[in-house]
Length: 434
Image 1 (tube, rainbow, N blue to C red):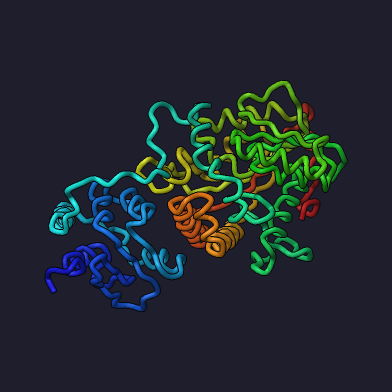
Image 2 (image 1 turned 90 degrees about the vertical axis):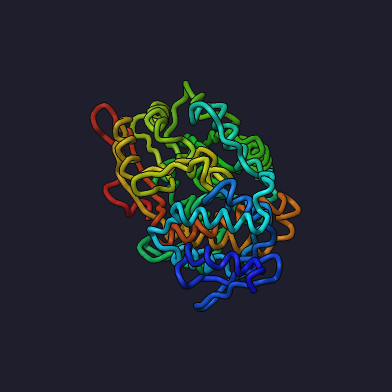
């Protein structure tokens, strides 16, 4: 019994989880540490490389490398597995010096210290120099978005929209809960339409809209087809721009929608009636927030409106190079507190008129994306590789839980540029867009 991997590993599981591992742990020699509770999943440790990854990069990064490389597998409902792991680890859990020594000793007995496994190829290397320069932002965006348009089509569905949807029915007044019976396509359309109405595009045809971080062009196309807007849409992802231009042409919208492969910092000399920034602000960075809103303010006519739609975090958070998300998903990503967003917009000269929280809607959006990925798993692997499919699977599931428990938020902040007399042109209440 003492010679099995499970016997060697069991004391470390007790250190991590206390007396009650939340899941069944199965090791490469066939030995098992059973859960003492209601087991809803299995962690399968396929090789000693899993331990090597965690020894060479202790913590979240090492565990991420083990999972992405396939040295660790998760079996069962991904949401339940992650929820149980999260709830089972005490908030003050630390191995300490003695625990770390025991972990290294156990890894040595299992032959996991003799070599350093290669990093999975999907990993973004740490970057030197200042964050959020043009060149560094371009590399970070390429890492995340230039995975392949067909891969994203599988995950996102026909709407090709990579941001929080809005799951409401036509007769909903906006105060009901997110409705899971609404299709993802309809929910994304509802989100785009809400933003168009908040921006006042319904007030007159032909208004000029700037869509910053336009993705595959879905918001721009909705604004043009539904409200007759003339749209300039910008992205720094070459693969997004390529498909967005094709979609615009196929829809017969080339005369009203321009897709530009450019950085928002290069925009100048134009004036717009409205600006939408949807899922873009997470890539801007705290140190660039003032510059970002100053630039957008300079591009708006008097009484022009900005809608900033972004993930938020209480107190703000930075996705560092040692985190799974920072290394594999969103290099250099930063989340801001919604209070900081409001303050930055006001300092830039915007009058903030509305703040709406949609976090439950993002949780449901992510669950539908996960379902799409699971349903089309083999095709996703063939398009982007198994490592990339694994990354998206676990990051989207974990993010859904973050929105469900309130660790993450999603806020739409609406601002306007008053004219020289202080006139905003805004409606007196929300009924204009609800």
